[in-house]
Image 1 (tube, helix red, strand yellow):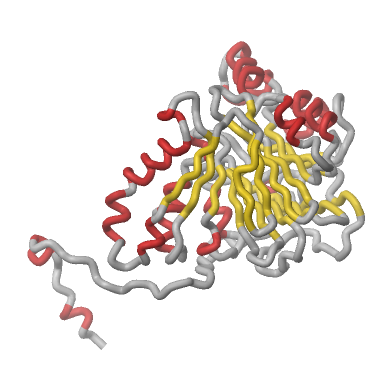
Image 2 (cartoon, helix red, strand yellow):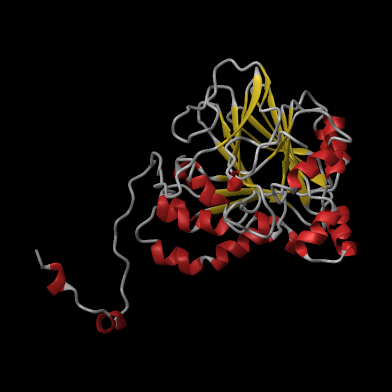
Amino acid sequence: MSGLPAPTFAGGKRAMTTDPVVGSPARTYPEVFVPGEEDLEDGEFRVTVLGSGNPWVTRAQASGSILVEVGNRERDLLIFDLGTGSLANFASLKLPVNALDKVFITHLHADHIADLITLFGSYRKSGRVDRGVKVWGPSGPEARLGTAHFVAGIREACQWDSDSTRSIHAPESFELEVEEFEYSATQVVYEQNGVTVTSFPVVHALSGAVGYRIDFAGLTVVHSGDTRPGWPLVHACEEGNVDLLIHECFPPAEAIAASMGVPIERARVIVDEAHTSPRGAGKVFDLVRPRMAGLWHTVVTPAGTPLLFDDLRKVYDGPVVQTQDLTVFNVTTEAVIVRQSEVEAQPRPVPGTPRSEPQARPPAQPDWWDDALIPLDDVNSLP
């Protein structure tokens, strides 16, 4: 497909689409999104792809994660999956760390949950000082395959990290709660501050994967998670119009075989038995007819992405975006606008407004440290 902008890692500045605006925006949006320079409007969604890639993490593409900023009074942040590298992209958005406390998991593949340890442990030291993290996620066909079992394991694995910092952080920051729901039902799993999140089952690798629909102020965003083309997603989109549908899309099997060096038979299994081909994504988009569609979980290349679009266009003719890391959608009543972000590589954390005073008690020291530590009085006394 000609006319598609280059990926950002290849020098591109714009979103990879030929339709960056759908509708008639009520205000003017700059060509690129610069974090910290645009307020979130009341009544809108701002959806940022924190991780657009797959298990092979690169500097250009973190593993799967999508952030939804809500234009409600609370300015809630909801994050869907936390793949490796996604929180580095979150840091570039200059949003308050203290507000990132609601996580929705689509499934438990490592490339969708690895940064939960970073959020729970490391971000406590970087601004998440007085509140815990709550995780919503699906059950599994057995208890050991569900989100509750996984979160309990994370909590246990982080005991050394947690115990080493209990004396200097508020007790609330050590909380890691989980709300597990039945994976096989389409149901409301979250309803607060005007926001409703509905889960629906999807077919991916093993029972226990879901996608999500997010509703607020008459706007709807749907995220497929990892999936084969499935009716539960289509049915979840039927109640009202969908403003933005972000659906996974793998390249054709031939492209995977060439790029990964695997036999074509294995590549076909990867695409056909666990994921969605370009034509499959196109069929889903054609059934749903969202205002804007986004392709996600795709390895982006200057040569391969136009071919992917060519394949998809045999099935679907509506507005489509190939998402990259830090692709940003503004979803409003009047329009859907998509842009790329222009970010700092080394941003400072934005702690947010704490709800309690931080603790400042030094940790108790074992006796053997007295002999192990090098005295610094002589150098500390220098002018």
